[in-house]
Image (spheres, rainbow, N blue to C red):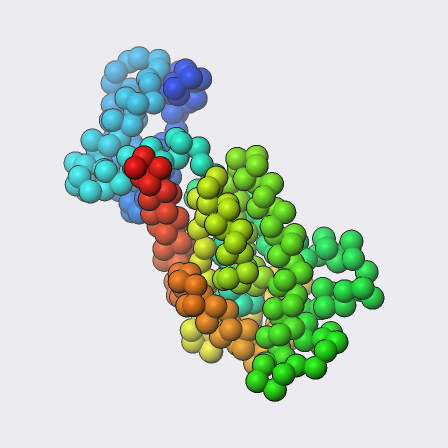
Length: 310
């Protein structure tokens, strides 16, 4: 941000590296912890005004945090100020955040994942469909025909009879999930090794598949899992029509033709989530859903940081 004198107000981090103060960045950090955007921008403007009044070219990040926190406390109370400080303290410890968002096709995972990544400044947002596509290039269809089918069509490549008490759609789907999970594990392993955040979203993020991995990953990263669902059948169907209108190359017909199979997959992954205690988040208003996911992640990051202190 430029001061009245036409110069940047520099914020010095703990290594005294200078970064220009930004109202947008300041407000964004408050919105992440659940502060309403209008209030966050008001506080950010108040902070900027105080910095300009100081007539100093730079400020330590600790002092900037103190000014912002006091403004939050004035507007919203001690609870909001404490949560903001706890979030900043947890992020300073540098533990990478790995977000795993599952859900049946057409529930809005991509939209939520993109916005969650943007709000948390996680640049890597990868759909499991992309992982599957890479694996398709490496493994011939003759060797793994199931990999080359859609998740709701994977049962067509089953080579063994399905027991009478099993749903072939679910068996085929789970078999494809097991294949794709190998690539997903590699992605998450690499992100944790590099200490970078990652959002992985897709139908293949089935609760329970990565349980042993999560136990291992949690030692080095904050792992956040959630399953997105559209409970109303008509609303779920409408998602495909809306998506087709927004992207002309994505026809809704193939999904609507397989809608019954999609709902069976949805029912299955929900049962997996309930068995494992993975949070199920109903897709209603998009902004509300995004904020609920972000709040879940903030809570997990703060809790992880407090556990490490204990």
